[in-house]
Image (cartoon, one colour):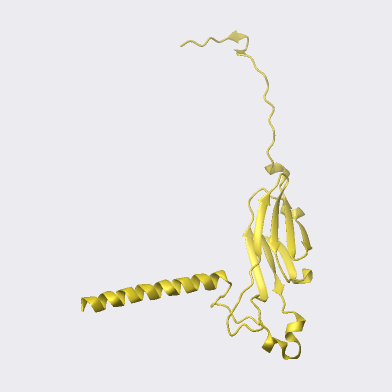
Length: 173
C-alpha cells in the first residue's frame, strides 16, 4: 500500500511538472487560452496573440523606444499618450495571398495575426507633448524628449574664504 501511495504521489508530481512546462512553452510561443480564436490560417483551433517586442534606451536628450512589428502596415498602428502611459495598438493582418481561393486551408504559419495592444507607464520628467514616431521596415522608433526641468543642471561652485563677516574663525581640536 505504501508503494502505491508513493507511486501515485510521484505520478501526480510528474503530471503537475509536465503541465507547468507545457504552460511555460505555450506562453513563450504566444498561445493564449483565454482569448478568442485568432483568424490565423492553419492554427488548428489554437488561439495565438501577437504582442510586439519592445526595447528602450536612455540617451542624453530623450528616451528612445523601439517596437518590432513585423508584417504590420504603418496605417494599422496607432500610438497615443494618455495618463502618463504610452499606448501602442494596432493589427497585424493576414496576407491576402493566404485568404484567396481557399489558400488558408492549405497554409501553415507560426505567426500570430490579429489585434495587439501594449501600454507602458512613462517615467516622470518626459516631455510627452513632443513625442516623435518613425515607422520603417516593420520597426516603430519612438523618441520622447526629456523635459528641460528634468535635465541635470551644472551648479557653479564659488571659491570662498574661511572668514565670515570680517571675523576669522579658528578650528581647534
